[in-house]
Structure formats: C-alpha cells, structure tokens
Length: 262
Image 1 (cartoon, rainbow, N blue to C red):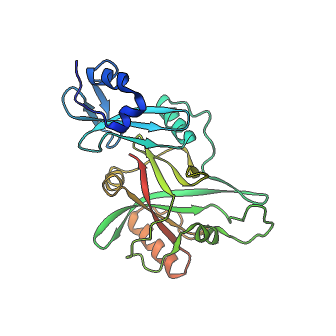
Image 2: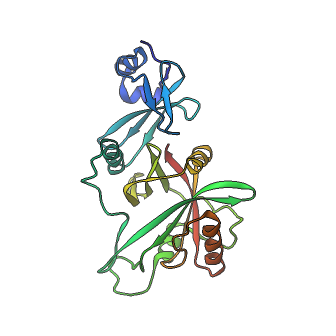
Image 3: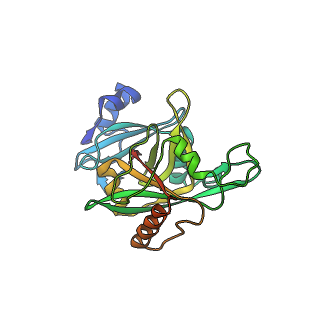
C-alpha cells in the first residue's frame, strides 16, 4: 500500500531513486512507527511522514517522523554515535564506553551532564549543565591544577556574568540527539568533521519538555563549571540557583550550539 511519505532530495540522493520509490510504494516502509522526534506513534498510511536518514562514515540508519515534527532530511552523525544509537535500539550495549572519559596526565576524570530548562527573558531554553567529578588537567601535564574552565575558554566558551543573557554561539560544536535521546556533545575535528567531546555510556533520556524546546529552537545551551560547583540538583529551580551562584563567583562558562539530529 502506498505510504504518505516525504522523501527530500537529499535523502533520495543518499538512498537512490530505486529505494526511494520502494519506500513510497510501501514495500520497505513500515505502516506504524515511533516518531524519531517526539517518540509518539505514527502511521505512514494515515498521516504525512518524514524520512530522516542518519548518516555516519560507514553506517546509515533510516528513521521516520511525523511531518509536523520535522521535515525529511539527512542528519550527519559521527560513526560511533550512530552505532551507539543502533545499539540502543537493538539492546546491545556491550561496546559502550564509559561516559565522558577525558585523558589527563596520569588520571581520568568523568563528566556529568544534567539536562534542564533555563528561563531567559521569559523563554525556556534547553540546557546542558556539565561538571566533572574531579579536576581536569591538560594532556601531558603533571600539574594538579584544575584546567577545565581554561581549556573550555580556549575552545571558544565564554564566561557567564548574567544568567539572563543568552550565551554566544560556538563554532563547530553541537549536541547530538538521536532517537529522542541525548547521545553526545560533539566538538570540531579534522577536515571539517566532528568528534565526541562527551559521549553517553547509554543514551541519556530527556524530558518531553526539554526535547520539545530543543526541536523547536534547534539550539542547545551548554553551561560548564569546575568539579564541586553545581552538584546534582533535584529540581530546575535549584539548578538555576546553583548556576547563578557559580556565575557570581566567576566559575561558569557557556556557549550555545546547534542541535544535531532529532
């Protein structure tokens, strides 16, 4: 049975005319699906449906979404993040890596990430709050100093003076949301590519409100503070208070970055 599918020119170029025609004819497309954006059920026989192609270096995954959520598009994804998304679907996490290992001189620190909504000028923005579980040293350094914030400043993050001001955009970074969950924060790599700055051991679930705000804005705010500054706050109002206190002490940096994926 023919499907009510939207196949963009970019998706068609990637999968080929023959496969695109099979999808439209209903041969290779499911009738029912879980929207890769809002994660609620959809039916390509009854409503307009977008084809969304996640493409890595060697792997490609075709997903489906309500056309009212997102348009048909190709989403470039780092290969390891895409394989992680596939593992999360199949339930195979045997190849998962520890969350956010950051090599230092002779020790390893782990980054913790909290997802929350931040109110700025009467508008809620999706935010990631990053805090290591210990001091971060420069690679190759024997110093015991915590260089977490200086390293981020060198990458283009800016100090936060006022939580009511939107952080400036940062070039080449993005937050990867695939299959409705947070998989990684990507940083600029070589030759225009991206690599994982932080990668979840298992895809991190986000609230419906956070995902809706992120898909609407297509931008995510990232705040970062040294170990022991923010802590694990159980409520967003307490997280906001901790962020304001960190900013007042000069211990908070931030940037805004595009949302990759859905």
